[in-house]
Length: 179
Image (tube, rainbow, N blue to C red; front, side):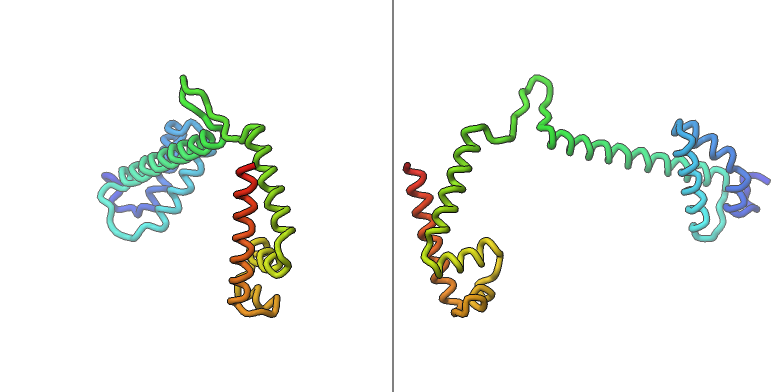
């Protein structure tokens, strides 16, 4: 029998399984990974369309080699993806470049707190209808139609309340920025 033309690929797998295991172990250096690849090879052999194979042994070894290359490429892609993620999360900078701290400094944090306090106060001091419409729409996420239904007013009434609220809040922020 030359390359196994008379035997089916499944039978050849059984015949060459020990050799395939040794090849995969030598290439991966990990018995568990070699066994995983061998099992995956068996599944692929079982799923392949029936048909003649000129050299079944070479076919099996080429399949095993291709699977190892695919696994290596996938591992490299995963490592590159993980490295990019880690670099982004840690603000990694290349050697010689000082990493940038993406967090706000104390002054920026204080300004942000003051701005929030100004907005909170401005919202609390909105005229009643405008405040209710603003809170339902912007804070609770209701549409204008839902706000209208909830308040028992027309959709155009909601739009007018929102216009008043936005004008009032813009003025409050503008005054805060000048102070």
